[in-house]
Amino acid sequence: MLVPIIQWAIHRLDPVVEILEPQFRKRRRSIGEDLEKYGSGSMLVFVHRDSETMTLDERLREFDGIARSDVVPVVPVQMSEAWILFNGTAIAKAAGSSSAEVSVPSVAELEGIRDPKGRLDDLLVEAAGKPTGRRGKVFKRSIVERRVSVAGYISDYAPLERVPAFARFQETLASCYPYGSAAGA
Image (cartoon, rainbow, N blue to C red; front, side, top):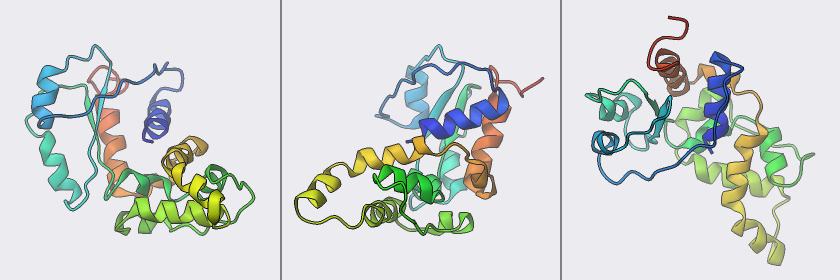
């Protein structure tokens, strides 16, 4: 779900950069321990951590002491789904009802939503017309895929620049790009 967001942010810094198919690895140890064992050979390594019950600063402290200049923390407040809740059109498209009107939270509200995943699921079901019976069961089985597709339907993440966690992500990305030095330096 975060790949389209990361790609958008990178293209803001460098519109002509080629972004290769990302490799995903599930973290098994602490962030520092995993990164010690993972030599990526990539320009940048994005490490996703939802803040969940921690503050953004508390979660970012997990990255303290990491000596690698290619690591970009991606830490949405609460969950990743919070970063895609602002676009009703994308939610409607992902629900298969592109003409549906979806009432989304304001950007200022995003970091305060306790269960962004549940809220997104509710909005997807609502946009689909609250399907019931067999259609409802089929829809609910596809809900994870639909969540992920919302991000792909969003072409402009600029509204998130007012969200502190997203702004921090962009600042860190800019300081690491390209090759661990400030852009243009």
